Image (tube, rainbow over the protein chains, first blue to last red):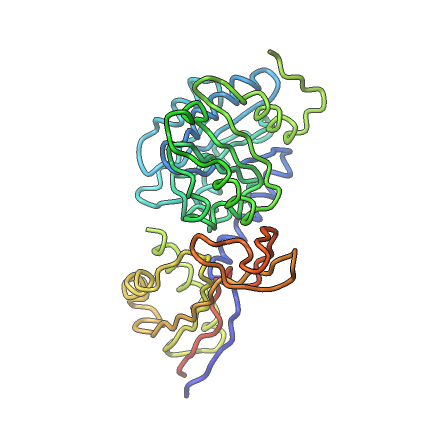
Length: 224
Length: 114
C-alpha cells in the first residue's frame, strides 16, 4: 500500500538542532561568539590578527579556523597570541554545527570571552549552515567588485555586521560604493558597516570597538 | 560539496519520518526549495543515488518544487518578483523590503510503501 506522509521540516533541521546545543554550551560558559564569513582572500585572517592585537590583555580570545586543508590560518592566529583550533573540512565548502561541536571540547571555554569562528572562504555555502554562534559577520573587499551583494544575496542577508576591507585600493579599482551599498541595503536594511583597511589600519579602531562592545566590556577603552 | 551534506541531511530526515510507519520502501520525496537557498536540483539528485543506496529510500524519486523570490515593498506595500540586478521596488524604487517567499528549504512530504 502506498501512503503519503507529511513531513514539513527544514532539510537542515538536524544541523540547526546541533547549532542550538553549541549555542547553549557557549552561553553557559559565558562565551560570546562571532562567525566570520567571506570569499577567499577577503582578509578574514588579517582582520582576526588585528582583533587579537587590539583586544590583547582585555579579552580572552580563541579562534576556530575552518579550511579545506592546512593549518596556516590557525598558525597565524596562534602567532598573534590567540588560542586556536584548526578544522580541516577535507573538501567540504563550509563549516557546520557538527564540526563546531567537535572543536568546542578542544577549548577551555571557561577561560574564553570571545570565540571567533573563521569559516571556509566561500560566499555561498556557509550562509546555509547555522553553527550556534551569536552573530555573523561578512567581510567583503574592494577587489571582489561592487556587484557581490547582487550575486550572493543569501550571504548578505544573513549577517549582523559587514566589513568592507581593502578600502586603500579604492583609487585603483572601479568600485561604485553607492551601487554596492544599495544592494546591501535592500538585502539587509540598516546593516552596520565598517569600511576599513587591514593594510593601512584605517577604520580598524571603530571595528575593534564594535567587537569589544559586543563582548560587553563596559570598561573597555581603545588605546591609541 | 555543499549538496552532498544537504543530501545526507535529506536522507536522514526522510528515514526518520518513515521509521514509525513501518514502511518497506520510500518511493518519493517532495521538496520545496526557494530560489534564495542556492541549491542545484541536479546535484542533489546526483548525490541522492549514492547516499540512498542500501537504505529504505534507495531509488526514491525526488520532486522539486521551486519557489521564486517574492518581495514586499514596505514603502508602497506592493509585492513584486525581483530581477537579477533589480532588487529594489519596480513601482516606487523603494529599498525597504520584506521577503515573502524564496527562503523555503524543506521536505514537504514523503511517499512510502508498506
